[in-house]
Length: 423
Image (cartoon, rainbow, N blue to C red; front, side, top):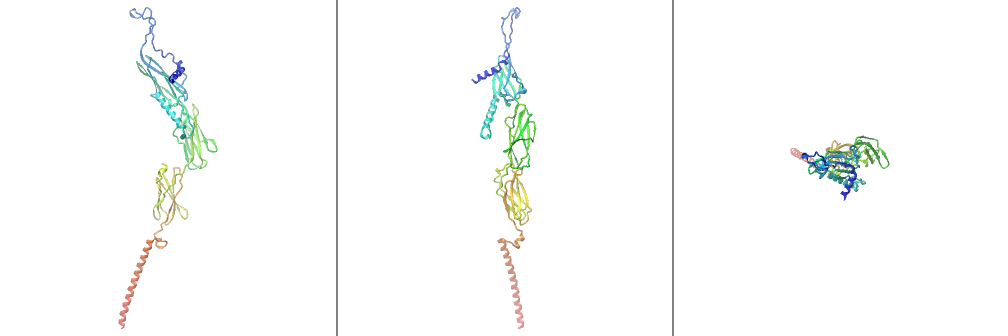
């Protein structure tokens, strides 16, 4: 039933365009006394038909101009055919592919795009995707509500009992109003209010000679943004946040000779989030004037791929003075040198993002190691050191006692000999 309605619709649109293209016979009347050789003549009104291979010629429908075809129009093409006997088959192609297959693929894609845009996950209202209806009847092709997807080279292929033929190619260019180019970055982040952002807005359009407009919108105002440059189908806006905690939307749209853009492009400006704080930081090796700090890498999967820098700041534990800082790339491992001897330190470890934003600090207390001289002259000593000291003292006392004992015995001997002599 739909096929019959389609045929009636095409006939009503195009009947007047048929002309005499279907007058395919060659008629010859032979009469009078000077007929064929031998004096024989054929009866008056006898018709003879010549048989030949088909020929086809493709043209745009009346009243249409190739340079002024745009989306939403109804476009029809005519394949003028001469053939005897008449053709048995007509095939329409777009860029070498059967048109019916191309149309089915395009309309299926449009339907899926409409469903995706209307789903809750899309985060917005549904946007109707136009579909092109392709109507075919022998040498006539009608594209209703044509879209830019049907831009390309058309041809008609015909076949009869005498052979096949392909028409000339007809290049159809369907112009359209601007629309946002797919795959563009939508969120732009900043670290400080002094940072100027450059936000590109690119369009798909035909023709590409566009006029752009920009608007800035936040919770309190909507105003035109004038700080932008444009070149063809691309425009770049410059924007500097007023404060370090500003959230704004920048809206971009354009128009060309076909018309104005239906759905604007939206971009979002927001503060750059701080990276995740480091964990598990500890001193893993130490001497009097240097030490190593290492932080856990268990949360490496939670960090963005661009997280490559880490920072360690070292402060004097008593005075709070900054003693130095060390950066590390790739892994949160730090080596700190040139620390004053016997100095207790407070180390603060940070993750740093590509825009200079820091995480919350991870604190590490670095205990002081006293010099060897202090171990001998005062202060609390380890038990092993005290034991060694006591042993050395006892050894010295024993040596002194031994020497004293030898001296006393020697004195007794002298006294004994002296007494004998006196006696």
